[in-house]
Length: 182
Image 1 (cartoon, rainbow, N blue to C red):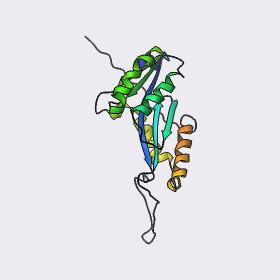
Image 2: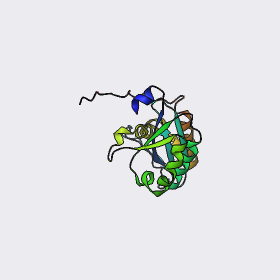
Image 3: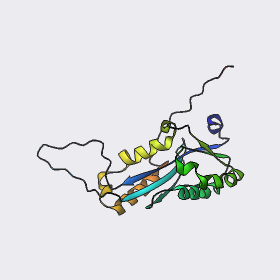
Image 4: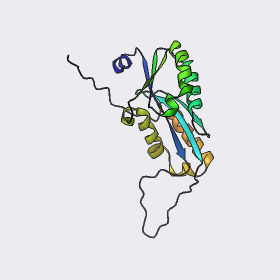
């Protein structure tokens, strides 16, 4: 599959969802001993994201204030399937919302449009580049002031997702091919 993607014969997307809450993701901080530093925080508020990403920084994203469920994922893949220009493979993890009945009911129609779903082995998030994008979004692309309110956060997340592939890029390593000898 990787070689077909590298040669341009198929589009290969990696998909996943993530939540960005008003509880800031600040992995470290620094302050003077007499300085008081704080960030506003509200539990349960934020934005949920679903995204499909390529190693060449193309993307298809959708956001929601509601919990992302199987119906939401299936709806996004349905919409995505109508935009395809060539045979496309979407790599997903084995989360229940990716493998359940809602998805199974649509896979045949998607395949007729050229969209195929490939499931990663269980416990292998390191194989899904979408995980890297969500980490970058939460820890690098959002600033402290983006957490001031739900509106600020939604706007900042939307801007970052729109900027992905333009001003925000990730240089993913290439595929490592190995020869198999029988």
